[in-house]
Image (spheres, rainbow, N blue to C red):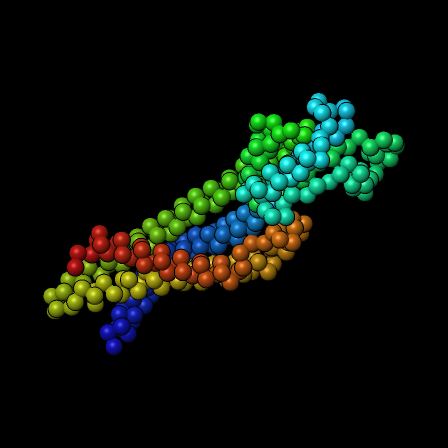
Length: 298
């Protein structure tokens, strides 16, 4: 019975100051919409970054003929290099592939026939193609083969500039997403708190009378807490509706046209919607609690 009275009081307060309530709900809506958008775009960008890092590899070129700077690699040295790479914890069990010069030329004829169309002799060296578990490890793996130099290895190439650019972009995406979400959450919390503060100020005489007749602290605080929760929930629910419309109408015409790879996906919309609703409730509770602690001395 008491809970029903508290909810009724909260609803009465919301409808009594409708303009303030709408302003708070709209701010929560905008904030939660942008948070949901950032969650979707941020997880998609992170997935793309992981996909791009997964494409990074280390090409270990062996000293195959007399044109290299060292003695041609021996079978024993090839086996030693293979074992060294397979025992590296940064490389997966199937992350080391040996490509002979004949296989390399055959592959090059398929991918770039114009380049090798007039080539008579095979200029390519034997090599190991190494796939690390994590893209961030390509430089460390390359350094482990060149410093100190590994016998039989002529050069090691991992696309240093491209690898660093991809890793830098991935890190920037992560940092900016976290900062933007944090700022939006703080702004929405402050506005909900201001709404509750105005409601407390408008009902200050009523609160004094309630305390004089013996109302408990829970009975006085309850409507304001429920008011904050309802404001946060309404704004978050409206944001979910807008996010769903954006997903169905806008997304197919933008990101949906990008051929980024089948394994590049954002977080499922159901999880995003649930997270937005939970954040709306959390913001409403946080805004109410902080405001009551400061302005409601009961």
